Length: 110
Length: 341
Image (cartoon, rainbow over all chains, first blue to last red; front, side, top):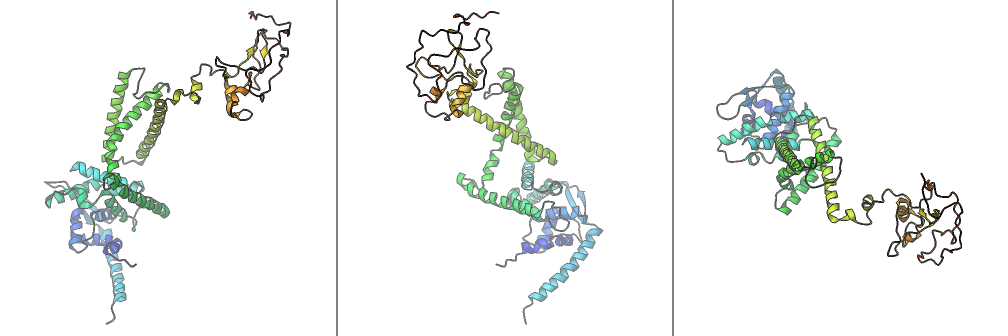
């Protein structure tokens, strides 16, 4: 049985998606999750985003800083560093090429 | 809320315990802070829901976290086959967990087992106190309360101290498992020792309550036998001679089996015991034990009138042979043995 759902597709491109929503604005965990969901990745879970952020940080693509908050806990903001921007650019190219190939493959005969 | 966060994080951590330490630490280091952020957002959006309701059960959260590993830059150091094996065991346990839970009215069996944790902490404290008391007095005797120098009061104080300590440790490790792998392993090993000791204690208590401690046929009764030091019996006649092939009989005419060699005859003697083996035991019964050095025992005993009974002879306690009075004991032996020193 062929089963393609967004969760499976997302696995391969989650890194890229997280890097993408950080391109213009830094963000903290829950904020990043919200951006991804607003953008249409509604099935994405908190653990996926948190785990991906930790891993991208460990891999050296992100920097973090803590912003104190008057009410509630401090927030840890994540920001792209130059390595992260390079990664986003390269990953974006790979994705566009891959997506265009898939589109060609899946094109319905007119 | 903080307790809920700590518990949730601890349960996620427990579900990831098979990961290599650094990968696990990378994932878990920030988790409580992150969960606090999430909790604050939940609060801001109206609140009311628990973490588990918003994020799913900790095990699911852990599974999702695990799925984010293994991409480029991932950390997994475990070989793929081990990972698959662990996943299989995990899946099987998960199925069992869900199937057995409803039997006792819970969604998952693990849910119920988690409730029993504090009970285990109390029991662990008691077991450690018992273990310490046992080591203290070189394992002599065993009660249900630890005793030190025979003092019950001191034992009670120690017991309370250990139980309180165990509860403290339990709460602490449940909220935040020790970060260092070596400490976690040491704790686990200590738990295993305590569990094994507990099983032994339970078996010993059961044994004693069943009364088999004093049961005649149990080897333990030999231990408490005042004749446990006896290896063999030498029966001396009035002439001071060792009577070979003697049988011992009690007031009821039942054979008396005395001494290590005679007892051993029961389980590995010629014929391997069997019915009436007691009657086939003759004294001295150790084949290779030389006669005791007694100054008044003559070196060469005179033959007995009824000969040497063979061990395979039919049991006949009332044996027809009667010592004939005409036998003269060897001249060198005096009738009344008077040990002179």
